[in-house]
Length: 511
Ligand SMILES: Cc1cc2nc3c(=O)[nH]c(=O)nc-3n(C[C@H](O)[C@H](O)[C@H](O)COP(=O)(O)OP(=O)(O)OC[C@H]3O[C@@H](n4cnc5c(N)ncnc54)[C@H](O)[C@@H]3O)c2cc1C
Image (tube, rainbow, N blue to C red):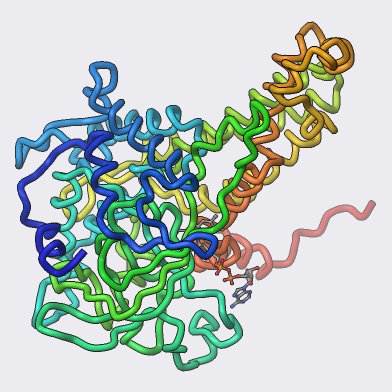
């Protein structure tokens, strides 16, 4: 992509509306620089490591345009008259939030609750920032108004229904010398951290790395900013938030090894949802002035992360993560239950209790979602935001592990010992499979496929990836817990304890 193309991609083009599968696939042929296993990829849409996921996204985009889903997944933007995805809709009422909930439920259900970086996960991120547009505008720059940039960028994404990824953290090179260690004012390592190299009349030139960005192989654009861990920088040149097309010259993505690839069986039912993760290398990348949201001063991000403004919630993820987690939890629970039934252990007290533990998590989450919806309220920008969710995301990071652990425990060795589809069609061994590998009241085909679903959720490289994703994707849970604690209101209870310990207990009769 050269500078002329970049201009074509700018925020002023005629709107294209709700994405379709074909348009999405074409949009990825933008000269993006992607590497995998030592190879430079010509076209991510046909490369074996990426084409399944691209196809899956295209399927979803087509679905949102069908009679069945159009009214739930798209809407007509009142300002532009363009029909586009509900993911990008600015919620102006509780009804709008309910519509967004249904859209997120559909994205989650249609992808089995396994697509962490779905189309509707970065849209709320941008919308969440827009809730505090004035904070971004408060930082002045002679070249642009950051709040206006954010607003125009949202319009551009909304009217063209773009799919974004994001990249927040610094490369994992040396964590001993970094600014998150609050007590130590160490210098940034400019060899590593993304930073401004120079300003030009067109924008800023940036270099450095980001670890990591899920879906960078097949996203249209990348939103780059600072994570909770890295929000406080010592060198202002490292304070940046912007969004650029994935095909921008100088932006290079290194993809990890693909997961769940073995094809010699019914195998990996979720393999089409390998959404990839990439290291991003920025080598003198031009970020135009109108794509910058924060520069040299991280106060907007710090203030938002600290939830300044009292009760008004800065909910980065909207419904997307809540709905996806709920689908994932119910999926893990039902698969564990069906596995227990298929091998005749469901009636055992210990097993039933573990299944009940999983059901408890589902119920807690459902109640929490209702609470979050109940606490929704208008924001200073005139939109509506859901209630607080920060504790929820931390809780899910730890609970998801527990649920896959239970699933593995209930499966026993069956999670790995199942015949492949080709074994099933081999007449030489089929009689033994029918006899020794069937389950309780179920034949070997049903049982082996069911256990393969369990395997892909909790034991395969896909399942392991998903576990790791759930734990880390929202940032370091330890850091998030600390941040939560710092804003956690304990005054009422503290006063009660102070009162208690300031007075002697009344004398009672000694026993
Ligand atoms: C599957 C997956 C997908 C992801 N997708 C995205 C994405 O799309 N976009 C994105 O921006 N990020 C993404 N992330 C990155 C994620 O936000 C980070 O993994 C997370 O913030 C932790 O950072 P890290 O991996 O660099 O670990 P580190 O920060 O290097 O932590 C390693 C270990 O050291 C400990 N540690 C680190 N620093 C300190 C300290 N100062 N004091 C005490 N202990 C410390 C940590 O607790 C941890 O145990 C993804 C991560 C994963 C695993």
